[in-house]
Image 1 (cartoon, helix red, strand yellow):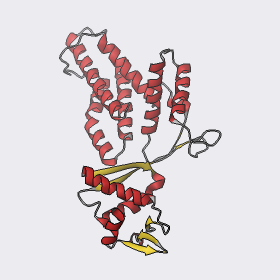
Image 2: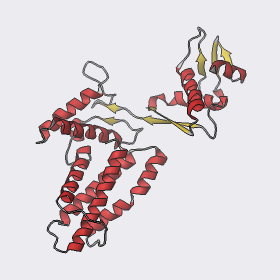
Image 3: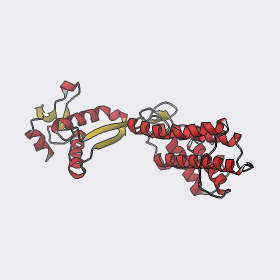
Length: 288
């Protein structure tokens, strides 16, 4: 249905027997809709899916999460779709470009034989590395840590940036890693589970470390807004790492279980309870 529709709108021109949409006024090559032999191209099917989605779902916004090397293709497709009326002010589309995971040679990560690395193999390799570094024996737990390390390592980078895959760095329990964030959360849960629950309320902030942690908590809303506006999960990954670091500083400087002032102890427990909730929310948003 789409090709006759484009033809009826006068958008399609014929060039060397092929049906194309001329985009020269935008300094772009033409979008080839149908080759001279009748074969259709990626631009054809991508435009058809825009029309199909608009008809079935009537979305305000469509996000295409695809390798940055497809940037020109999506510029052509979206411009062609706007000219055809499939995209307009009420129905928009964005290319959410992302970089590549590279080997130490700086080229897209591949196996020794030159094949694309399978995610399952990467996870298994991370499981082995974490098994050697940790005293944890439960395979399911180790696999969860491995997946967290892998996801966090990918999402801490701005999505359009390519990065070097470094197994040792990504599984470091002390660095900017998924394992470090999980460890902070486990430590908080351990403190909270060893104390009775109550109506949590922060009433006092006496030390610099408490204030630093509280200030970091107030940055949560603007972090989410930045991540949404820029379509950039690394804002959340960076934030949750900084929050975990601030908690670590607080934990080292402000004893909780040995605190004799009951009300002040409750206030400190309330502060880390809120920290726990924010860390959990961030990890949920990152798919961890």
